Length: 76
Image (cartoon, rainbow, N blue to C red):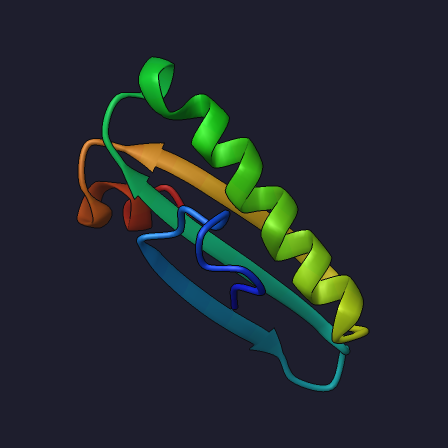
C-alpha cells in the first residue's frame, strides 16, 4: 500500500490480517545492503504507517532490508 509511489521505496509488500482481532501487519522487503538502504527503509516504513493511518487500519508496519526478498521473508 503506497500513497505516493515516488516516495515509497517498497519492492515487495505483504499484508496479513489477524482475523477477529482487527490488527494488521504490513511488511515490506527492500533488497540490498542495510547500510546503503537504511534511509529508504525509514521512508518506506513512514509511508506505510501514513497509509495505514489514512485508511484507519490498526496494526504494525515493518520494513526489512535483506540481500534478497526470499531472505527478507524468512525474517518475518
